[in-house]
Image (cartoon, rainbow, N blue to C red; front, side, top):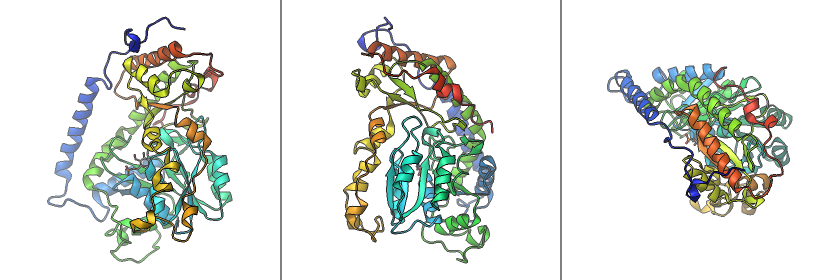
Length: 453
Ligand SMILES: Cc1ncc(COP(=O)(O)O)c(C=O)c1O
């Protein structure tokens, strides 16, 4: 056990440099300025929108579908819009259920409500934090129409098993790839395992358009259905399968992206392989530094999976249940060492209510009084608001901590962060952990570099 005094107890802090490095802030500002300036001459003179999906919208969609390896890409104004369109496209309707992990951003689940259907929450795997295929299967009922999986924090879910489950039960499969741009599972990019793959291009995502999203599919009918849902103005022009003859109309949503967002997203997509390579390196270094540290294990990557997007670097802290610091005290002690560690965001945002499956929106708020169609009017209300029992998610949501995506820092900085975390863990472990995170199962040992496909 280390003799070094913790910063929180008056000792010397371990990490002195700021995150990210000031030079990286300057670099980022310069790149953003260049992207913004370069779009000015390209904006059509006096024309501030592109309704027919041509020009920069087409350019981005073509580049994105090439990168992912899908037949069709449809750009939209948010990731939420892509999920809503995907659920509509695969035929989610009142009376249906869609299986969704509780451990995700709520936009994976809320568009299900907009289809008049009910999200049914499933548990996650305690190592990967992605949807547990066995629990998905347990949650299937005659009402299930679709399964929606999330490659949470850039970590691919077990897509081969989940695809087989979907096929066996004749269910649609939607992938929420909002954290995982460029991730690959068993040689196949995420987004192409499902019937539709949905990517947020929101600010801070690995491909960043400010506010935007893009859906990919190989199925021309699903593409057409997404078009008629929210893209009036390009129906006649863009129909892939000739599914509908709507003329110039759509079903009422307007999900088209702003062309400025596309101008930002395109160069950001070009930078994605570099972002993924850098993040993979930083994640490797961090995992190596933490190997064998007591009471902590990194989110694990499955064999054959390659992370991408790296929305956050998430770690599982098990010290509290072994009599050590509470998670909040642990985070504070690590922060004092100069490391930008926080309580996991989804545990905080969603755990205010005890995760999504405990959130009032899904359990208590009487949505029938709100108007609109945000509940399934074909079912008894008590049926819709029944709470799920998800022991793994509930336990993990008291254990997860996270670091920001480590980009714009040196290897030395990442190593110092790992050392600082280990220092706190070793100084505060009260009993030998039952199982330290062993070297052989470390994600660092398993994963290859994303962005190389
Ligand atoms: C997992 C996940 N799904 C969906 C979304 C929704 O994307 P957007 O904010 O672009 O609507 C987000 C956004 O943060 C997300 O993290």
